[in-house]
Length: 81
Image: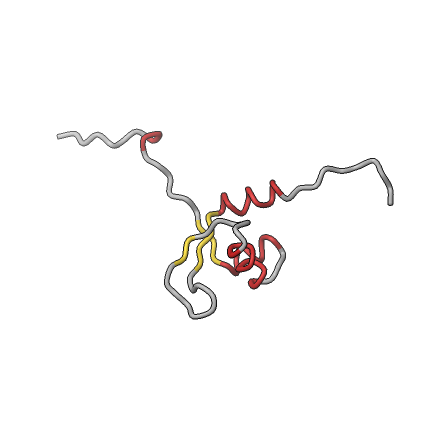
């Protein structure tokens, strides 16, 4: 009996999630800033659990962090202030 394994390209890779502390370290900001970015809609996230003030167990897709960094790039200018 042979069991055929699914082809490598048919298996979807699960997204990698980061917690608020990991996102803060990657962006070099505080955890409060991460929560504010999420609340303001600048950073996509999933909430795991509930908190009275801030959602507990926030998970941010690593791709969302990379997209935020890419979108926040400022093009160099030739003007000197």
